[in-house]
Amino acid sequence: MVSRQESGPRPFHESIVWMIRGADLLVQLEHLGHLLKITKIPDGHDLIIAAWNDRWRVVVGHQDSTGVVDFLKAQKSEAQLNGAWSFSDVRDKSVELSGLIAEQGTDGSEWEDRVVECAEKLASALKAMVRALHKEKPSL
Image 1 (cartoon, rainbow, N blue to C red):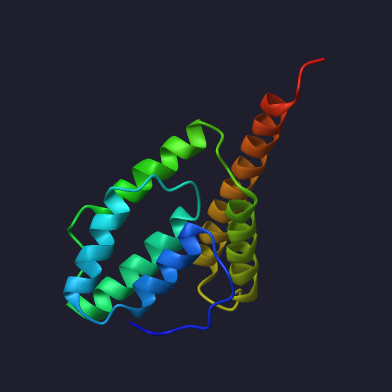
Image 2 (cartoon, rainbow, N blue to C red):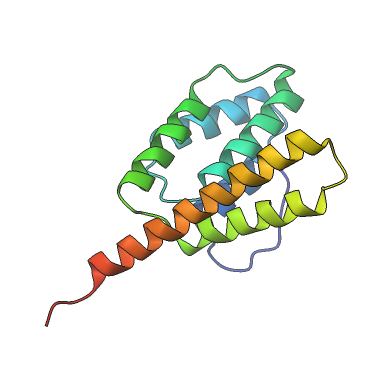
């Protein structure tokens, strides 16, 4: 795996994305996939899924069929239902939306669909964060 300069502890999703991107062998991906399946992941699901799919295609040569992506999607859905959106989820969606806006030279209808989907996800994330903040208010 690729080495990196230590800059202190990072959120799990950032560390696992870094490790996935550095995996050069199928056995490394299998171990990381097992770790993902036994870990409760609070946020960064989309980043992990994207890194997993990209690296799996490079290392293995076809789409993943291990169930890792399905597991991550289920965890993401559970987190959304519980209002467990974090700042990093909102930041990730904002970055994704900014990237889509920068790509506006691509196929018009596909681009518009992606921007609308991303904007809807971002709005949903913000609503969930507001709900979570209201739940956390201390009662007087």
